[in-house]
Length: 304
Image: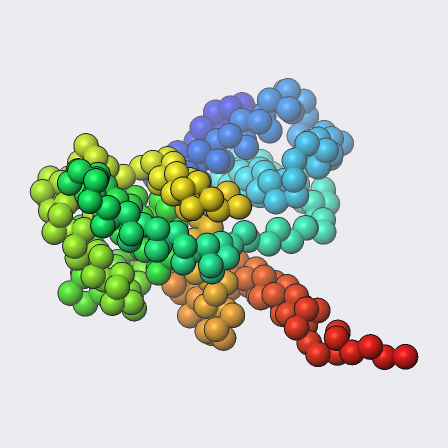
């Protein structure tokens, strides 16, 4: 068996038959390429596979190790199904391990409020040119959308105008694996700024079909979103590094704190499994612990 050829066939299968998104296929390609390099033409036996696992645990964090193992196991499952291999070699290798819980990083409410307040105030600065005000309008609309919907930044950047219904306040999101979901915008201020933005950028939006565009009229990029948020975070002297994905974590965490049913949050985030969404319960539990340690009256009682 020529492993390189089989990997190429598998990646083709993932892209065109399973219709996985490009990022997932790229991650598979990286993980499988690394596996092939580390294996170095050796036999696919228990000893060599265990050596590969030891290497992963020594070099990477557990979340990354889990992903890389899953990529390789998926390949061998495919090869077994296609009868390229009689027996999946990973069946004889123990890959389970206790995984660390990496809590999602969220943006404190006061910093989100400061950031939004800063953006709205910048729109009223008289010294700015109309062009500068137009860019600030776009940036405000993006930040408001991220926080009010919990969108992945990739979903926001690829959001097409035909899937945006501002009249009814509904976005149709083309999520991971081609899964479609609908998100309701429930805040009138957010809807208002989106309507103003759409009217201002009507020409660019119509020309390219994407709802959020850059200064050249092209689709807004994920890298530009990161730079933009970093710039405004510095302007308000935020003491944390804010990324676009942290708005998604904040969206889910704050809804959880308001006792919103986890199934609704799962649906809004577009998680296929409730297990993925349950990570936010750990965040709220940590918050409850902090409240009890600092706010409960028993902590202020001088007994004995």
